[in-house]
Length: 155
Image (tube, rainbow, N blue to C red; front, side):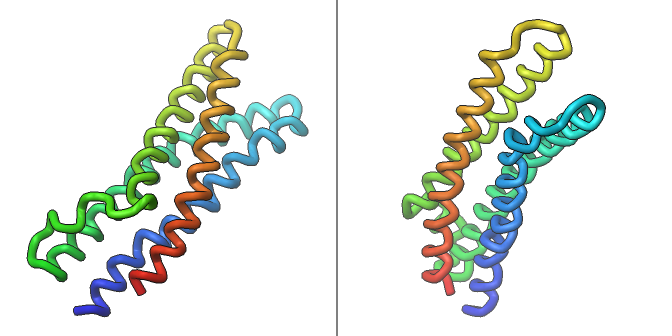
């Protein structure tokens, strides 16, 4: 049973690695977007917006996978699925906070896109979008590092 528990608990970190790579690529839009012009920029911006929406749903799914893995771990360890659900370390607490920040990033991105479509001033929304993404990326890096350390405890 220990091997099954370990495999189940490693699903989240493996998927999270891909998620972090995707987030870093998405975060690199600022630098990439400055060098693009015309139709190429419009297409890249549309892709950036699509990927932002997908990242939100991927983040929610990733958090759900983590909770499901913790519930299964509780069943295997204690015969109680609720015993391991509450966060037990900083890594566990920072995940939901990061998800909330990701939601704000997407929210401000949507508002920016809406204002651009309406030909209104969008500087404030774009700044909020950028600052929220900066905060989120800082938290993601801390969360990922703590998750890496926590993964060694699981193994």
